[in-house]
Image (cartoon, rainbow, N blue to C red; front, side, top):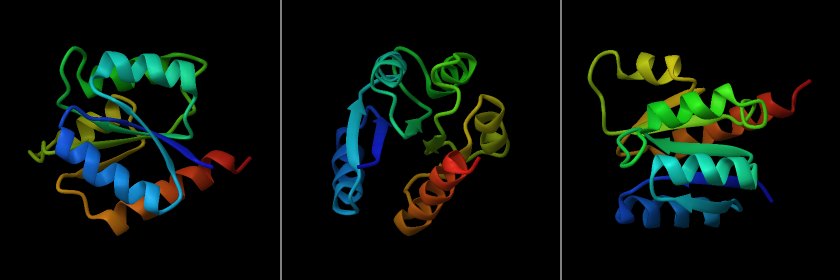
Amino acid sequence: MIRILYVEDNEDNVYMLSQRLKRHGFQVLVARDGEQGVEMARREKPDLILMDLGLPTLDGWSAARLLKAAPDTRRIPIVALSAHTMPGDRERALEAGCDEYDAKPVAFEKLLAKIDRLLQDRTTP
């Protein structure tokens, strides 16, 4: 079963998206802030991370930088999910190490396509 770490502090977002992902056969792990997300990623080694950028304790940009700098987590694909939709936000997320960016509210089918592509890229030699 593919394991996704969802790093999100908004309870409604966690419930809605994690339920939809579970219905599509994913196991969903949840972290409530960036610091917990980094710790869980290092411990659990998920197949993919969905990372909110506006997080307490450690924001998503900083968490992505830490994960991509560490040898044990750098290959885990990160999709930034954010209500930040100002010009340059996507580029800023990619510069921080995120592999993809999606604005909230999430278009679920589009997100699934990104997840599938990133997981395939990860397994392709």
